[in-house]
Image (cartoon, rainbow, N blue to C red; front, side, top):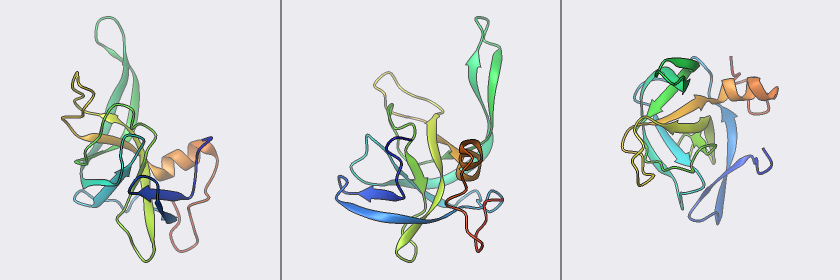
Length: 144
């Protein structure tokens, strides 16, 4: 949160584009075009939402899941180790972007720290609820 901003950046942080609204929790769909803007990226890396689901975050010594993340989104954008916390957003819309979520991980991370599977992200509404902030939600596009 220390470096949180209402902007996402293209081309090496030289050109900022304002985040104008948060995506409604019930309005994202498989096939939506989403982009990742993260630490390892010099620009946007885009793809489409491939599905929704639950991710095992922590397992015990026998491989049994002990902590689940629910209602995660899976997308086909390129990602790498170190991209966690990056903004997931729409392409440019009317001078700004729509916040879709926050990048959390990968379905298949290679030993070279490159994601060979799908990117995983938390929906922006869930992130904002956890932070106790609804700053990106507006009367025209509430987050619920």
